[in-house]
View 1 (cartoon, rainbow, N blue to C red):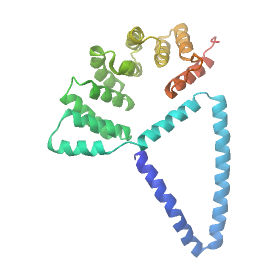
View 2: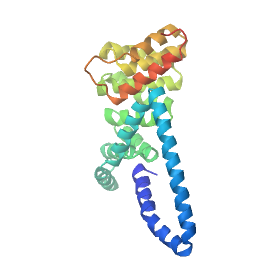
View 3: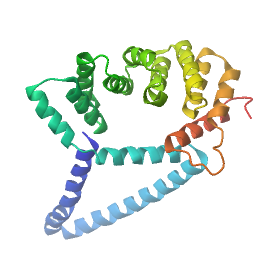
Length: 261
């Protein structure tokens, strides 16, 4: 179920509540009042405990607030997706199969949260036009999201070899993630060196480097990378939510690393 459909179902349920309440009130007025009072008390308790829990998370778990911002942004993005390009791509594909429309369909479906349907379209787009960087990068990310790290690495590696600067280095970092999840930390570390040589210090790359060193058993290098990822931003600058989330996770990782200040 997509987020938009889930939201629509919630709206319908909310709209039905007055009707259900009226029907039950006609049959058992006293029982309805008791249920309403019990529900109100339960809701108040849930809201109170939820607020306390959220406050504790904000105060004691730094990644919570950046994660909340990212989740809110992702939900808003899905709710605002324009479905018209998807409908138009499907209509054209009925008459003529081509890589561009498969890519459009896969990209929009991913943004709607329908990853299972998106994957065949993206795979077909790459099959029809293997040299196109956009569909290949999108397919690699979709495979990574689906937990198919080995397939994602196989799709992304040729693109990174041909265009290491694609998407300002984001595709290269996707390949690093795929390699790390596949268990090839040495190859991931080698790709991170390429990224550093081209783009310099990047907070997300430092986090991935810490993960690679951790998998390879180099504790000192891991701590150093975590410190780089946890560095405070320059005074007067505002971090993007994704960077704030990485920094918070690095800070927590340093808490649990013995001997790290």
